[in-house]
Amino acid sequence: MPKANRSAETGEFVSEEYAAANPDTTVTETIEYYVPDDLSELGEAQEQAPYRTLLEVWRAVLEPAVTGEMRTDPISPQWATKMVTTYPGIGFADVEGIHHGVFDMAAELAVILQEEIDSDEECLKKASAQEDATENAAHYKYLLAAWQVHLVQAELAWRPSHREAALDLAVLSEVQQMFLGEMGLVAHLDSIGFEFTEEDKAVLQDHLIAARQMVLGGDDE
Image (cartoon, rainbow, N blue to C red; front, side, top):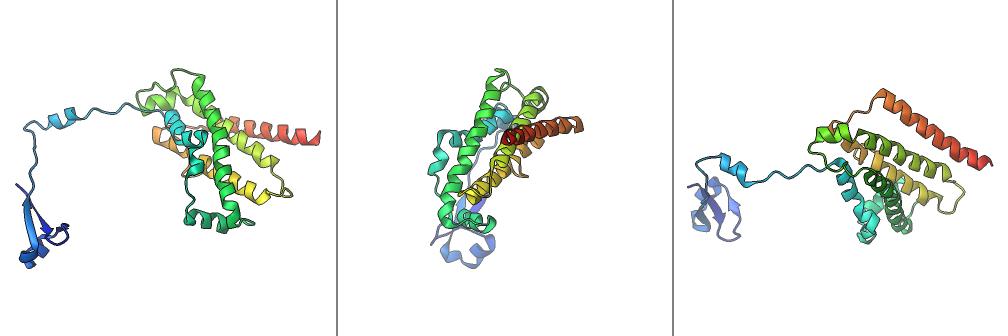
């Protein structure tokens, strides 16, 4: 049986060298464990968890924003300092407003996600990442467009003359990073092998241009 050495004073594990040099303050223990004769038993003991589609994962990530639970999360000094140093015109008194604003907008985008999930009762029933990427491709392409259109509309509605302009801009920037940034939700698509072709990019660009024209055309009226 393998042995382990502990300090008699702290109970923490110590090295063989320390135990040899300090025999009076070291306790040596025998570690017992069971190894089955047939190693395949180890695999049988653990059932493989069913695959969860990225749609379901995104919904779970955004659920606290929808329920409002994220509003009660304490704001860390580090995050507050990041907001103040990153965004011009932001003071510590504005940080709570950014915190709430981010989750309010995330909740709006979560509604778009839930509506897309509700449109197809089979979309969450995929057995692998490959099935998820191919059979749910239309859903992911739609969400890429719908989320960006929503953010573009919010961006075009922003006005520097508004009293809360600095706060609103910080909220918009944080949400864009949360959804579209390198570490955001959309970046998870790479993990399932989702392919976004040049043709898909062209279609998305057309959606964004149409959204901009709709907002700007409305302003002109």
